[in-house]
Length: 113
Ligand SMILES: [Ca+2]
Ligand SMILES: [Ca+2]
Image 1 (cartoon, rainbow, N blue to C red):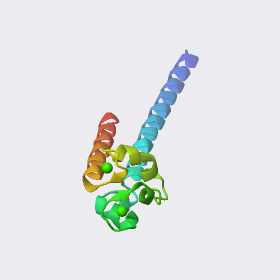
Image 2 (cartoon, rainbow, N blue to C red):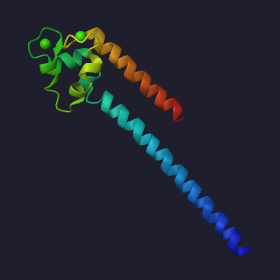
Image 3 (cartoon, rainbow, N blue to C red):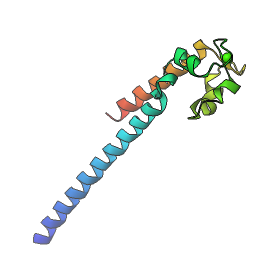
């Protein structure tokens, strides 16, 4: 009987360890999503984006200008952000994208409790 209770305790410990590591992993996913999408701060608003990358100062981000983004977020996401596919990101397109991204983070946070 001693062995059985020891087994039960071990199982409980493993369950708790597993559960806590799972929670940590979920936290990391949320953190990563937030840090990728909200940091650096210059990517969290269109005005910050323009200040950082709009080389010809026309208030719109072209694909070439986006290519200067060193963390590659704009390169990777450019086609998603550029809703009308004219190879330019304007304020409305970027704000729509941000809204969508923020909605996803909120959903993720909700689903992980
Ligand atoms: Ca420009
Ligand atoms: Ca566009």
